[in-house]
Each structure stands twice: as structure tokens, then as C-alpha cells.
Image (cartoon, rainbow, N blue to C red):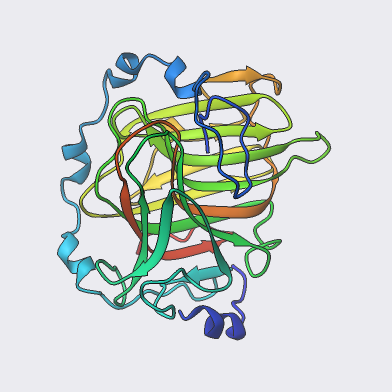
Length: 305
């Protein structure tokens, strides 16, 4: 682990299946109208043997404990961590965070929290159209370049409800240029097919949009601990839910399939320079609402304790 700069402590207070090539800028992306990578997979096939959501939630920590504002968030030595206690309620989080919104919003909120009293609230709007985004974004120091080729992340999330059907969404997106290959790549974790967790790979400057689905459903209505690992060497992605590894969305260069084959269906990892956390979806659905608290990022696994 890296030593955390005390000045940073004081400062902080502590994509996807679009049917087209991804646009990672803050400009609104067009509605998905062509092929959605996840929709190429028969949802019924994925349903077979799927883990029941109630089984995942069995034994979960009582959500009221988190809402009460438990103390003890400690990420000493991490490259970056934030419990959002230092930002004013009702507005966007301050530096080093920025926000990226399209018919969605990101705000500091006191409705729910794990540690302290505050967390980030992400919402998207009802209405016509398919694409919605509410992301909190990190670029530059202190996270990059420290985590540019490998990052382990951890955050607590409370999601009110997952979208029904084949709506695809993203919660964790890290992106950057792929060395020597002339395109930009996005490593993503989110979900699709009635709440099942999903890994997604998309590129800008090359045509590819790839997927890998889990049988596990993302919990709703309680605090869950989500962890991820993105590594440039080996083109690796890993995901943990409440401390348990989900091997069916661990990727080593290739997933279940792709729409667009410019990379030969290989998930080439970039040198990461931007991390976006929150909510983004690509097909029509109703309002979504989620909270995020206790974000920590390092070069070794952090865990949920």
C-alpha cells in the first residue's frame, strides 16, 4: 500500500451496451437503437441456475445500522478514500471529484450513510429516451497515475431497485488509452437481465462491445459492499460482493461474447486515467436511485471490514 498524504486527508475530509461506439465525454450520448451487446444473449439462458436474490440477501447486515451513521471508516495508507463527510449537503461533492450528468444528478445527501452522516445520492430522471447518467468522476491526482495500471476499489452501495428486463447499467467504469493500439477502452461493472451483475468492455476508436454475465443478482434495499480489481497486465477484471468473489464475472482477456469484433473479442485493458462511479443506463426505464459511501482505492485489495 502507498502512504497517504496528510494534505490529501485534509482536502478530502475523511458504459456499456449502447448499441454504438461509446462516447466517454460528458456530452449526451444518443439513444441506443442498434445492437445492444447484452441483448444478444438470451436472457432465459442466463436465468437458468441463477442465484435467487433472497439467498444473496440472507444474513446481510441490518441496513438500519448503516443508516444510523456508524463510525469507524478507516482506509489508512490507501491511495484514495472518501466518506463524503466534508462536503456540503445538497450540492455536488468537491475536489478532487467532478460530476458527469445526463438527465441525472449527483448530490451529497443525509438520507442514508454507512459511516458518519453523509453519502452520495445518484438519481436519474423518468421520461422518454433511453440514456441516463449520474456519475462522480476522479481524474488526475491523487488517484492517477498511481492507479493507472492496477486498482483495487471498494465502495458501499444502497440501490433502491434494479431495472427490469434487459436494461443494462454501469456502476464502476475505468477508462483510458490502450497502449500502442490507437483506441480507448472502458472496463465496466454493472448489471443487466433482471438485476444480474455484469462485466462489460467497450471501446472508442474501435468497434467492440463485449459482455460477461453473473448468475448473482445485485442486492437492493440494503447496504452492500462492492469491490473491483482492474489490471492492465493480463487484461484482468475481478468483482467481489459482500466479500465473496464472483468468479463468473472474473475476466482474463475474454468474456462471453461481443457485438463488434475489431479487437478479435479480446478485452485489451487500457492505462487508466479516469474513474466514474455511480449510475448510467442505456435503455428506457423508470427513475433509478442509489447511494454510495466509503469509497477506497488502492494497489492491493482493501476488503469490506
